[in-house]
Amino acid sequence: MINNVIFDIGNVLVDFHPIPYFQRLLPNSDMNVICPLIFDPIWEQIDAGRLTCEQAKQKHIQKHPQYAKEIESVYAHWKEMMSLKEDTYAYFKECKQGGFRVFLLSNIGAESHQYLSERYAFFDEADGAILSYRHHRIKPDVRIYQLLMERYRLNAEECVFFDDNPVNIQSACALGMKGILFENCTQAQREAALW
Image (cartoon, rainbow, N blue to C red; front, side):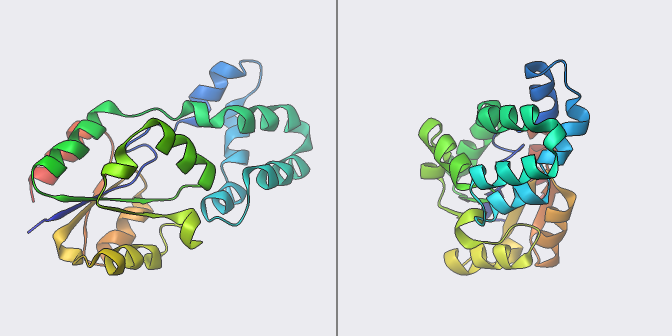
């Protein structure tokens, strides 16, 4: 029986699509090439709480000096591309109103957390959250899922987890959770209703 609903944040509760966003912002640069060079293992160290955005930016500029202008622009504007997915947020609230406990499990940096928490209520409305930068671990490391279960005394078989990354779903399922690869809210709700 499902009692707990766990939401990822990026591309589940908020939009996070760098390539189209920055292609519009920098139409004379090939962001199909440049964005993957920025949203890479160095960026993951922001989510892991091991680098600040400024430190990561400098590492990226050192690594790709030919794209220094684009890197500066991405770091200046990346927060602005994060906007609430209204349909998922409505489903989040519907789950709470339906008697489910609702949690957040996200690879997220400190600056993203601050930016989003100043604009949206879902951090305060959740029954709990494990945010990667606070614990220096990122999905799909199973230990971050275990931390969520231990802290909030969750049984894996009573949890359904929404994430847009297949490897993160695999880790959840390996621990006994029900995992749903999030494509859009309608699809995710339909699959969740099967449980």
